[in-house]
Image 1 (tube, rainbow, N blue to C red):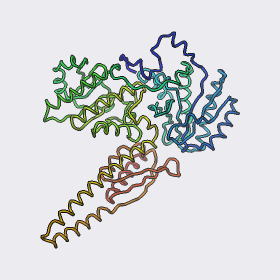
Image 2 (cartoon, helix red, strand yellow):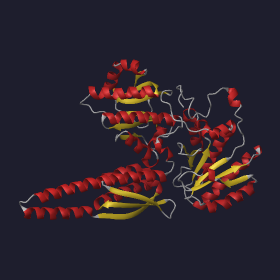
Image 3 (cartoon, rainbow, N blue to C red):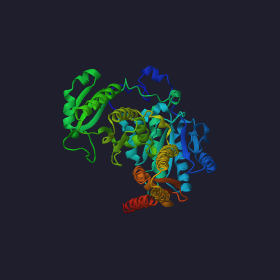
Image 4 (spheres, helix red, strand yellow):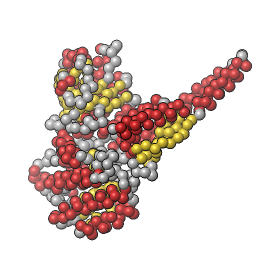
Length: 507
């Protein structure tokens, strides 16, 4: 977390209560190790004998399936490793390692493990300003994400992937190393019953202090800084800074641009930026400008969400604003920044900006995001995306049907030039049929390629009015891509996918 005031509430694992109260919480040094493994890696029937064999091999008190920890709407199996002997922690850790090795040998695909931790320990695992979790990532070379809370699920999920896409061997060892460091942290702190009972709380914008940064042209920044009444009206502090005060790997700012920083409570900063957007729009009528918010680069994937569901929801809530994260895919360092670009009407930009600022503060605190906080997996994201596509298709069909009915009425009302009208109708009918000719085909590509290019592929398909749907292949690392739409559009999409696959193979 940042050093700003106001973060001692909500999801903080390090309680702001008095030391005497903390001592009465009776933190347990021995606690269950809880995990969830998806069905695509191993079925419950195949997992059962593995758990029993490992329990006997390492003489652990209990390694059992735990239906209470079943993640909603995610196919898989939850299991817990329990032993009340304080000297058995190493044995339990070795058991965890052995289980993942056996699953890895059986599944023969990139392993992804979900560790379950109490809500009250989340901020402790994340650490101040995310330093603790970033240390684990650097130390283990594993991809590790503390997901947002899931609707009606008490524990917090930590997704851990070995991160190496082309060398499967050794994935479980990286995952185990990351889990071991998390367990070490939890053991040092201890876990209380209150940690399990604690629920994710919504962020209070009136209490949270923030330092929001925006990229503008120097002309706009000078105009804003002259309006000092904004500081008094909204109880904020305005500062102008150079582009050297932020760290972006690939400089996405121009020489004539700078940084505007607004300090204050989140609520006041949101109110102030809304007013600033309005004033700048009125003052610079001829100069259309985008809002670009400076955000820690390691929040980029969280803001986008699984399959883009989070950024899509933000855009919908902002009444159709266009939101784009200007970030390199490898910008995961805590010290790096990226830009979030917002375009649209003045009202769109105002609404989207205040939502994004709130999300950034939630990410700092490991806190909940919008309704799509329940989207921990691609199943939810795919359902969300499909529902949006269906709505878009219905709207297009309604528009096309209404336009066709209008043409029919006009042609029927016209009594003159009947021969010309018949020719026109037959011609339009022929064109309509040619437009309705669609191509349906399938190609097989690497799953890692789809993961890397997904958001760009969606935009590409939208430009050519082509639908793409992915299905799991019998071969673990590959994915079946179903493509349907206009013949020319489908060919363009296939060429795009194959060209990206060639680039990936060369790398």
